[in-house]
Length: 412
Image 1 (tube, one colour):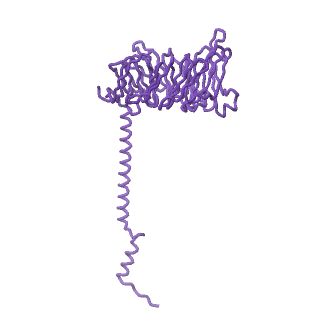
Image 2: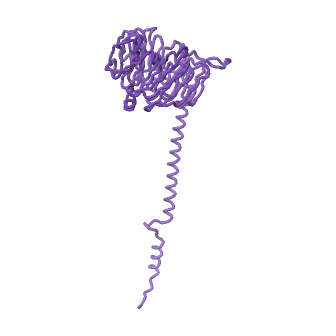
Image 3: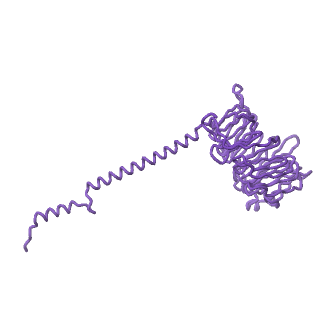
């Protein structure tokens, strides 16, 4: 057998073919491609870091920025009414007097108004529903942001009211020997009725219903000889309560020599009880369990709350400083901050992320983290100040006008 010797060209071709990687790409090309990929990855990461840094910077700047002035977005004249009260409602303002109710938008315009005839109006708001009752009288009016929904005449004198997000409302009614806690739909149909004996249960002080209207929390007090006994009682009108007791009671707590004038559902499953000595926090998904206790250190002259925090106002214990001291806690009972302030204290409004204090012609806005956002003395006396729907805008009601203002970093 004879073998043919390959030519030099054929040998070169063989060498070249051996050096070719799969796909026909040279090692130098692979190196360049990897380098370009690394450069591209670097710039992508750099841009991501830059965007995140800028976003964090803007967020921190907005959170830490202090405002020193304002500009008026809209001003509307009002007729002065000494009996007028104002409450935040649906992102705007609800004005009520013994003679009428008005819904005022962020521009200061009156969206709707209706006449009422109440001697001592008391109001509660939740979501897009408001209920106004005649304390000591018999009339309850229900409103949505669109206007009046219903008017109901109660069989006994009204002591207290509350409303849930569906528009259903509860009312404490008082007769000579029996008290009633009734729930009605927004149009006046009775949903349930509970009777409590004054001899056994005592006198109702306050009550609150959950956002969904399924849970009720009450505060009663009675005299046991010379001692005051305060009773907190929880009711559930869902399946759990139906399977527990005929009266739907699912829990209770007794306090000796301690008054509890205020109870409030902070969320659908968290309740705060403000006593004359402490704040009690309870979890109530179905039945109540104690969550935390916040003891007062000194006399309390005001309380406030939102869905994420509770707070108290006291006289500042430092006599050299004077003024007031605000203490704020989360819903687990942990102290968030203390904040001393010296403006005249008349009203306090707890918004989601800030606290608004007003008194005389002065206002103070403190963030939920305890930072001063805005402190200002207006030229007129303030009747009400609540946040508007847009960021850094507020609806301020004076005696003769309503202004929508936007905070600025420059002095006015």
